[in-house]
Image 1: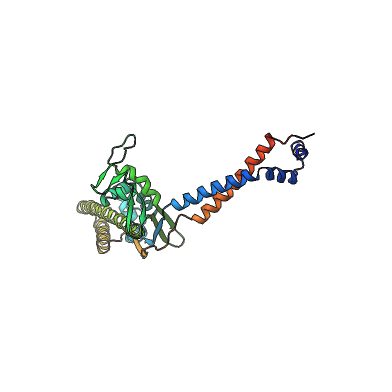
Image 2 (image 1 turned 30 degrees about the vertical axis):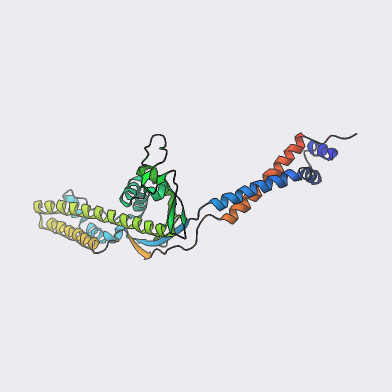
Length: 315
């Protein structure tokens, strides 16, 4: 065996697979024990992981072109006349989808969402979900359910009672957004231990986003109407007054349409369905990967051992 090892070490062009096999056979018990130990640890780790459920829904974004179609027509018809008076009507509406999706995952919106819905405990203190009792499994070292008080050891720079700042990162990782621009819809998903809470939080998330955007659009249109009314009252040309009045009519139309529906930003195409099967973790895949990595690592360590501790020739 020592001659095979020496030939393997000295020959840099040809690799002796028989010598490699001999080296691996020499350390076979180490490879078996190491692989089994790591595989067992991987199995135990996979079993300890809680199930995660994914709630998803499809939404149709209401772009700015839909809301601003009338303004776009007026811009083409009266843009030159309005510019004479120093008024910029502008082109058609811009697509609000990208901005809305970025805002939905922003710290400002999600922290406000956490505070409004009081999600501190399920986000920061839960470690799983008991399917039999349909209750979250709360870490007792973090939160005392009996007295409804936080008992955790406060991280550096924070207090015992957590803030929305701490919960933001955890909630942000639960949310996945995929925009299918060619197909014209947006898919929003939320993963959590409890399937019921995952579906409920996703519904709340889109509901609050639509409510925020509705209030924002209302404030902007009211401000625009007030400005246009002032400009119309001060206009000298009747044609220019007509432009302002038509713009006011379009803004009023937008306000009325927004009041009709609460889904002013994202309209539901496929409603949220309560997930019945877990989306993660893939325990079988985790065990297979753990076994493969343990086996390869043990083989590499075994080869290194044989290289640095060769068998001495009895002669």
